Length: 347
Image (cartoon, rainbow, N blue to C red):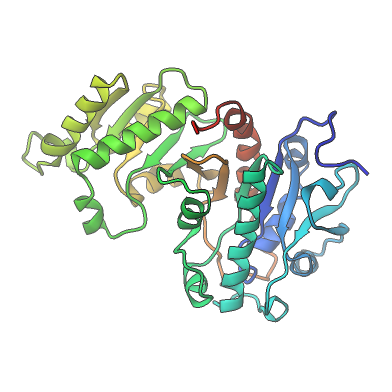
């Protein structure tokens, strides 16, 4: 049996959670493992319930052997098997497709928790995650809103930042504010918050070995406020933050009107864009390529990538969900893992 740390195999070892077991996560994970490109790039260990993985295989009409393991070192990458780090949770055998269920929320959390532990111990090189459901997490008594909150607490990383990327494209979008109302997001646009986001994005780009990253800050208001005619946040908050960043040696620019800055990044003028609120950057990335947009969590000792779609309960268990997004999450994890390993966070 070939162990996960076989010296002749340099492919990164990626843990892949199945997400909320009532959603499309299990079936898209199984679908992804039928893509030869995924196996060429990474050694994948699925983290979830082996019985739920088998159920997803039945939905897809597939029959690769499922090998339940207790640790990544037990994985067999020399044959056509699905290596599942088998995590059993109470009530998981009663979980039905397509419904919000407390047992599913608890299970989804336990898969992520186990993956984080294995990454922190060095047993995995990266973690890729299928979607969880926020309501199911809450009903299941999980004390975290979402993946980001779990990662922040369980890795003791206060400076997390979410970055969107699309493999093969010059697209990197960092989000200053994410899961909050648009009104609350506007209130978050302060000089300190913008500066902190630029600083964290700069640090992340250095870890990804972009030597002098050019960072653009998207404007909040139309036409970057037009000198105060359409809002004053650019003048009072964003410009001072950019100037502060430049004074500290960061190649920051902006505010740049949001209807132009993402195009300019794709043309190579900037290496990354700071999006001030959730939809500002989401619309730009997903319009370009909805399925291949990957979320990367930066600012941690470990690497985590994720799909940028939800649990899709309406189609769960029907075998029709596309696995492209989870395939891309694994491929981006494999691509970025060596950078994180070469550039650990300061102790």
